[in-house]
Amino acid sequence: MGQWALIEDVAIADCALEIEGRTLDDLFATAARAVAEIMVDPATVRPSTERTVTLTAPSLDLLLYDWLAELLYLKDSEQLVFPRVQAHVDSGAPCRLIVTMAGGPITADTTRRADPKAVTFHLFGVAPVDGGWRARVVLDV
Image 1 (tube, rainbow, N blue to C red):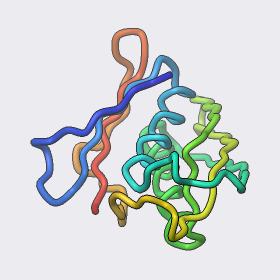
Image 2: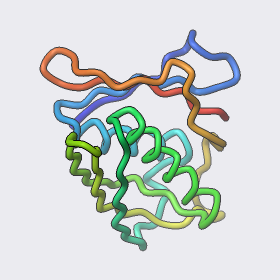
Image 3: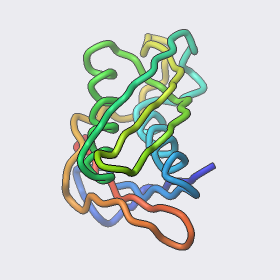
Image 4: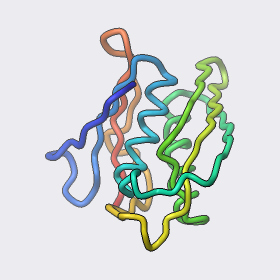
């Protein structure tokens, strides 16, 4: 399973993340988990909703951007958060993402953390590193 960390000294009013995964699938799933953990305490989300999402984009970085934007859209439009994600990434042309995810509604019992508004392109990137993948993401909170 991949890992992620907050980057404290990159953005003052935003939330900067560095995300690592062994594979692209792992990177995209870890990115989703990171965004969920930024928004809420996942242990307080009642798992009652499953979704499948398919996205395409001309490049891996735009695919990750669109994926994270989709998660924020679901939070804003349906009050849903998805801490459990299985992702499959095809890096062909165009790049394609198929995700199966589980989560639930943000309710009065959900411990809320931050309310990201958007994914930004500030320092945004996806790159292969050390036999795996790394992404930098800055969320506008």
